[in-house]
Image (tube, rainbow, N blue to C red):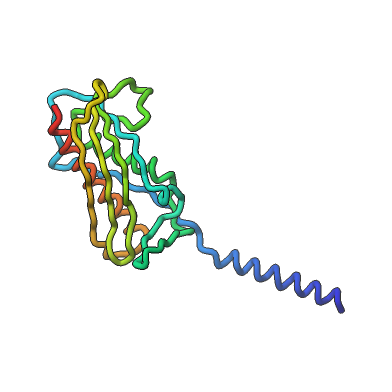
Length: 198
């Protein structure tokens, strides 16, 4: 009798585990997308300059695979089954580099570290403060940035960027698309700043 009860319990546990495995949703992976075509406001310079993007810093909270959502009660939601396909900081750097290469058609844009390409003329340092979403509200971006002359280590320009967009569709694909769009707008701000430097 005890042996039969033991077998029944083992069988029940196995069924429970299988049921849990079957009901677990698959993990979805996402990447930020760069601009698909040049902006009509793309900056044209007289000669090609070497411009380095980085280093870029992001909040420690965002240094994880899961996508982060800020909730109204100041808590956060960590999406276990909706994750970045690569480290977020690397993806942001790739997108900004691609965007600026498209916007600064007469410049060479290099992502940090650029030692393999030699020295750069200017460096854009970016400290991202916010890059997240509030459900059914908005996607948010905030960053401090500075453009440095690498030859004499002087500050040429700096600024504070804050971009927010209403988020109508709260799905993760739409959220990532909106975050990509915000990076595109930030890239345009940097491009305009670079255009003022001769």
